[in-house]
Structure formats: structure tokens, C-alpha cells
Image (cartoon, rainbow, N blue to C red; front, side, top):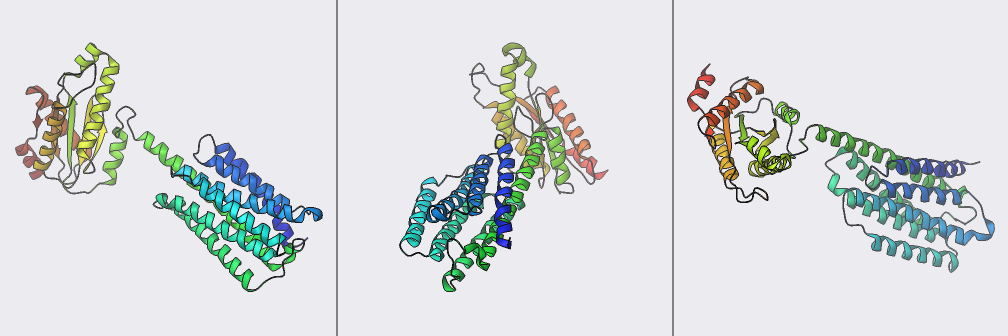
Length: 382
């Protein structure tokens, strides 16, 4: 048994195992079902290559070509679904049909295995480029960037093999191609790519799951903004930033809303207020729900006047918001407290002073912003 025989028997087993793994993940991972289909189809194709059928050589070769092309097309489709990109089924189907037709002419009319393989390899390279195109939206993630370069590397290998095979024919035949150096190189490159794709895709999926869990743990499910834990993590990331400020907001008379309209309406108010504050703050700050109806905004690179002005904008946005039924036509308000961080002051200390200012706003009649510039100056001086 030569090197090509060893590789060709190893390939279907490896592909079947990878297909089984992706099949197990298919209910939880978008696109994994098509990756499973790709590896299982590839396993059938490589198993066919390992099985000699002397009386059906041409149909067998064309079937093997079709399985390889279909497997790569399925990989690309899985990537498209993974990143919610438009699938290119018609393009892939037309390319596969045209390639099989060209390979049939090469084998039946011209008895040329070299050109049959050349057509199939270049079609495989084109389908790989399609998969790489779907990956472009995830290149900011290292694992998907690695997968992108794996696909480009196979494109280069397939293109190089095709050019070399056409310029320097190996005398390939349907019953003797596995005994050539070209066959060893082809099977080695396919084996390496199949392993790298499976391993890299699994790593990427695991990292995505970890990131999703972290986001879930740091997000308030009702309002969609950070929770207390998420805000503290974000503050830690921005530790040392100059001009840090905290705005606290609290819905006025929220208990009356819950008592008069029910907790479902209260939840609607919290969810709507979270979206309103987030859309108003945008990317200049981090928004979190830190209590029942209490929200916090963490800002960096702002002055006290700028933080106070943003709080006033938020106050007016709440006061002029139009609420859906059963609060249609009712005017809701919120109170705000603002504080600046000074020196090496801990976030909790700044939050405490913002909370005191929020209490002062409530005590002064609600629906107002309190920022004590003189008191902040004293804290800064101390």
C-alpha cells in the first residue's frame, strides 16, 4: 500500500468523523448542518476513490468529481448561512453542472484525465473563493480570519497544481492515477485542508459561544442594555480615562405605573426607556440598568457641563416621548443625578455621589437634573 492509498483510506474516515461532529452541533450552530452534509458527502466521494470499479471507471470518476464539488459548495453555503449572507445556490449549481459537463467531454471524447482533473480543481478553487467571500464580514475575529486564509491557501494550492499538471502532464489514467506523485500531493493537500477547516471552524464556533455567554451575562434581558456587572466590566476596561462622568436616571412615580397598569406595562416602560437612553447616548457612553427602574450612563472624555447637558437632553427625551397603549397620551418623566470622577476615585464612589444628586432631584420635585458644580470642585480639590 503506497502513500496515496493510505491517504485515500484515511480521508473518508476523517470526513465522516467531522461530519458527525458538525451534525451534533447542527441544532445549535447556524450553518453547521451544511458543514455536516459537506463532510459526509466528501466521505462518500473519497470512499468511492478508494474502491476500484474497473468496468465503471468513467461514471465513477464523474460521480467522485460531483461529490467533491458538492461538498465544497455545501461548505460555502454553510458559511453564508452562518453570517446571514445571500446564498449563491444558482451560481454554485451552474458551476458544478458546467464542470461535470467539461469533465465528461475530457474523459469521453479526449480520454484526458489531466484536463478532467484541471476542470474540477479550478471549479473547486472558485467555490473556495465563494466561501472566502462569505467570510469577509467576520475577518475582525481571529478564528474566522484564520479560516479565511486556510481557504485562500487551498485556492493557491489547487491553482498551482492545475497549472503544473497542464504544463507537465503526469500521464494520468483512470486506473493508475493514484500511483503518481501528483496523486500524493493532491490527497495530502485535501487532507490538510479538511482537517484545518474542521478544526478552525470548531474553534470559531466555540469562541462565538463563549462570547455569546459573556454578552448574555453582561446584558439586562428586559431593556437590552448592560446590567450592573456589564457596566462594571466596561468601566474597568476604560479605567484611567480622563473626564469620566456618571449619570443616574430614575423613572418618576414608577410604582404608580405598576400598581395602576400592571407589571407588564411597567416592563414595557423599562424596556422602552432603555432603548430611548441608548439611542440618545449612542456610542459616546455605556448604558446600564442597575436597579428596578434605575439606569446609569458612564461617559469618558467629557466635562461636567457636557455631562449635565446630556442628562438634560435625556430628561427632555423622556418627557416628550409618546408611549403606546395603555399609556397612550400619558406623560412620563424621569429624574437625573450627575457626578464627575476625580483623580483615582473608584467607580463606586462616583456612582454614590450621582445617586445623592439623583435623590436631590427627586426631593426637589422630580423631572429635573441635579449637578452640583461647587460640590464637585470641592471633591476635586480634596
